[in-house]
Image (tube, rainbow, N blue to C red; front, side, top):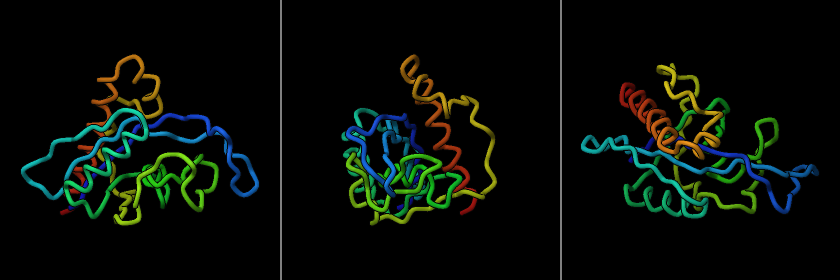
Length: 167
């Protein structure tokens, strides 16, 4: 089963800091929402939103992936190993920094290597998200969480439609 997902993140401190290539890592990106939908189930195109504290988000994501028998996770990012994948694997710290060789000491998706990760970078992007909240999502979530939920759902369904169009 293939699934499409998108994550909403915020920058948080790494406490205590860790070292990567002899440089301190003092901040990282933390997911606060994940939107996910099954691609290969024609009877269910409902976007499932996962929210809450980071540990619970990862537990719920793992349960969802197991329940739908996911084998492939499809997302969109600009890097070869993209933002969403690297965040969920626990190896992303900053856009201008290297990926960690192994997950940091913070929550991440257990057994992430069991899935095939497909980054649709380079595919023709659909219409721009009308909510336009990508960088503002963390602060917008504090004021109007439903707006950020709509934004995340839109991103996931846009990705889903592109994957279905390719099929």
